[in-house]
Length: 477
Ligand SMILES: NC(=O)C1=CN([C@@H]2O[C@H](COP(=O)(O)OP(=O)(O)OC[C@H]3O[C@@H](n4cnc5c(N)ncnc54)[C@H](O)[C@@H]3O)[C@@H](O)[C@H]2O)[C@@H](O)CC1
Ligand SMILES: [K+]
Image 1: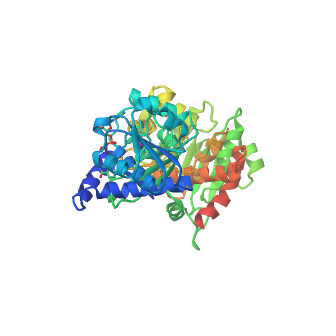
Image 2: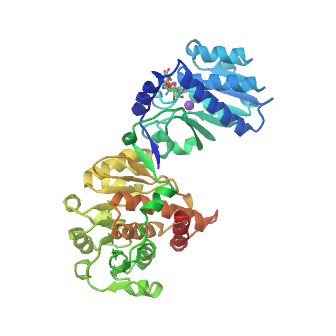
């Protein structure tokens, strides 16, 4: 499991560690890892031109010490001091001793134009708000060059705790982060600014239960997948009910069933007007022409994909005492009090637009502050919320670490892809996973299936569903 910690937690773990170590030791560890990452990126250090953007805090100190290490290996290093009188004094002395030089932001143009590599040490976890004007102007100049950009700890200008980007910020090719991941490195939009992320361990030990974000990895998912044993039969593996599709959108039913058949439940029961279309594609489906209440026993329901205005099906499903996944039209048709009153788990799977409609805010607001809105929606509905997007989030209503999915790909932004996801997650619910595990495991598998199916080319939602068995095999190794 990859975990991310708040700035407050990182700072208190740093204080505890610093008390045990000689002064400056942590910064030396950070700078050594940073310089090594830069050297890897450059391939050859000798003769390269490196520019350091140096702010007034310890983030700038990291950059200065790393710059000194690169200068000792023969790089030409120029530090642009944003606040000349307040730059990290020992770091600056080390750089000058190693043969580096300094310039003011006003004189930095030529060095930036010629740079092979720019290190962003403007701000790290001490940053507040977007970049200030002078720093933003400098960063704009860097963006106009071909230099590789390495962010120190975080891309300057992003909000470390939330992943929000409220003003100008650095766009890095690589971020080298120290001691612990910060939420901004995992959640969009900030994650996109970070480029690829390299972790440098400096001996920090944040408390195991103090994470604000978690990202499942292959091994975690493998351990959660429902695998049948010798005693299993189709009912013990769980039956998932799918109430989806309409005369206008029969395809949504087919795709939700396609996902559900690959999610680990022993059987899929379908109710709704798209029975013939579902059976034509998946003859193994148990099709009922009655409403959800009369359809027979299931261990979880999926309701909503392509459902049009069938409010009765949504109401019946919400009244069932089994886990329910609410998606698409189901989100719009569900009565909030009915969701809040449920005692069995509810998993809501909105994209940003649907979440915005439920919260009464603009879609852009949700996209700008995904973490806060996922939490808010979960609290308002007392339901687990899976907020779809480039970094899908899964938030429980009673707090705890939010799961963030690391496997997504933009190729998944294709019609019907969400229907496959809801069938898949519903199937995992029926197989007995908690709403949080079902949502995050489904997002993980679905993201990988998108990658496998696409391999760099456009895909249809049915391709994603078809790739799921291969993904299971890959994850189970
Ligand atoms: N504390 C530690 O033990 C360690 C800290 N390290 C580094 O230290 C960083 C934290 O250092 P600091 O606490 O000094 O804080 P930062 O260096 O992140 O930022 C604080 C400084 O930036 C300025 N600033 C804040 N917001 C700004 C904005 N929007 N635009 C421009 N300037 C802004 C502030 O005036 C302040 O002087 C970490 O991110 C990491 O890079 C590492 O050396 C590892 C060890
Ligand atoms: K930085």
